[in-house]
Amino acid sequence: SASTIRSIHAMFHGAMKAAEQARLIAKNPTEDVTLPKAAPKKMQILNDAQLDRFMEEIKADTLWYDFFYTELTTGLRRGELIALLWSDLDVEKRTIKVTKTAIKLDGKLVTAPPKTPNSIRTVVIPQQAVDLLVEDRQNHPASIYLFPSPRTGGIWSPEAIARLHKKILKAVGLDESVRFHDLRHTFATLALPNGVDAKTV
Image 1 (tube, rainbow, N blue to C red):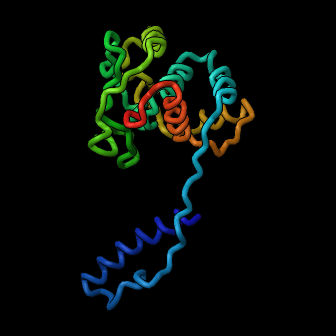
Image 2 (image 1 turned 90 degrees about the vertical axis):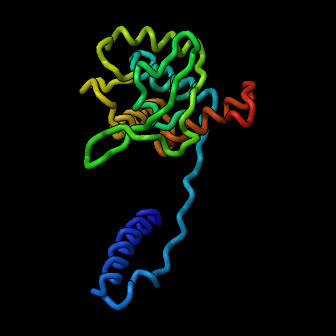
Image 3 (image 1 turned 135 degrees about the vertical axis):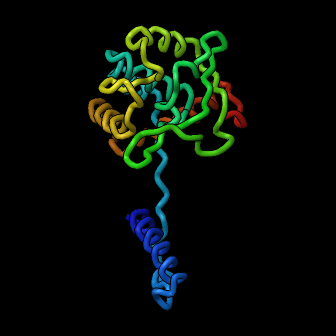
């Protein structure tokens, strides 16, 4: 794909630039390469009927249901969602503090500051989401994470989330090209007609 070619070129460009600066080569050969234009990823929004089918499919599993319900009522990035701690939830004020995101570093999942400074924020969630999270807490009272991995009890792997997401899409007959990130766009699209102002969205 165009994005893969551009990524490979960026890596070689950096290596060749270092070689040029070290006078190992006369000229950086990657300078004259014509790169393909990056194709923008198509945004896909789930409609009400599709969302109903999606949520109905996972209703039997509390952890999955709570996870996706929270995503669809907050629009958080996947890394932000899996990095949430129980202490980030304020039950009384019905808010979640977003102060970190989960990233891969040297093959290990760690937490780091969010994508941008503006990504550090407090998000209001509906009472139903609070009730679901409080109820689910009884299933893993010792974990510090709001959504612990059902396998390790630690941070839930982004790859595992992606596999689960595709499995759900397939089960309900939805296009498997719908990304997890598209749930974020779905949240924003649904928030506007439900009274959330455009600036907040």
